[in-house]
Image (cartoon, rainbow, N blue to C red; front, side):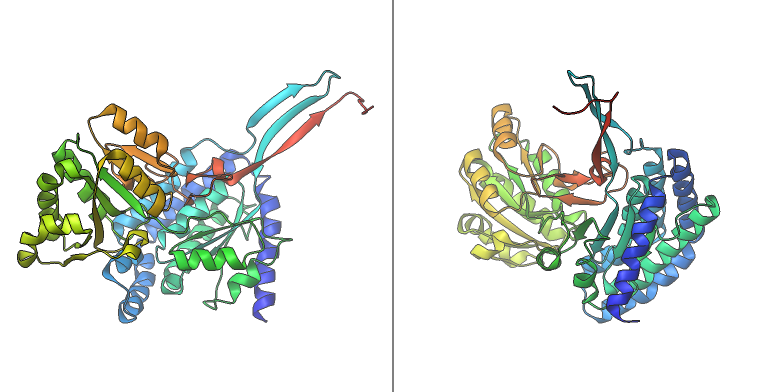
Length: 428
């Protein structure tokens, strides 16, 4: 079978499954999700065994420590996957909601009803837990999903999907056989072929680095919901509680540096830079974070350079546009909240940005004028996440302005249709 024939078969099977999924009741979908959650926990050893060769191959290929962390599946992460499925099961069904209803002067009754999108292709890198998250959200919202993970996680992804499908079949006799499918080949040519099948595929959502997302967006003939990169900022205002600012900045950068909501640039008001920067640079150095500073920040930290474990150097212009996904941080001194806003709107990626301040007027200005999907006052950017937003698992984060924006959960995976109920009305 050719690659074209393989992808066409996957897509056609998904279209059939999507119609079957749309007929399942909320109770039936939830019973399958709960069975899948239990199966993931029961088969934790099998999942870790499948993950081990993926990790080994990735390490040999030179994948960074931060990216290896994204790939690793341990008991804690498997438990978190199962927890995510249970949370999705507990959420309200997004399908069948009445979004609007009205009666026209001629008596025609109109209802706007939420419906599944249909067939959703998810393309992602490294993190195999996305397999469970994406499949569960698509399943609960009545969408068939085709999952294409990175080649570095192929064994892990196939094992997770197989366990979930088998559990679904055991829980429900009429479980749609092809509701969840994994692209079984690593060939890059599979993606443009799959995304040309507009008669079967309704939507594509890529998750990963900027290169992957741009490649997908450029080759796809179906709609793509995307964020190109996560260049996130924390701005420490002149009126900030500096202890709070330190905790937020440290969390935003080092808790998980390889994720899209991690801070890539720290902006510090000139009025408190001499006090704050030496403190935070020492704490970041303890975590081996390399600093790329503008001239003002570098001058303030110059005396600290010789005693550091990690590098400090002058930042290049391009650095401020860069998503590192690593233990690297840009630092810039700015003159007030307006300068911080201008920097973020120029260099940022419209993902997640935060201000730390006790000044309500400065906070309100920042929240109103920073043009990003998620904007925070006195909180870490790391909260931009479907689970943290109470959506259960997350399908992705959109920085688009048309349609979904920010963390995408169940409601963002639905479309709608209008239902008209008449008594013989005809248009004159």
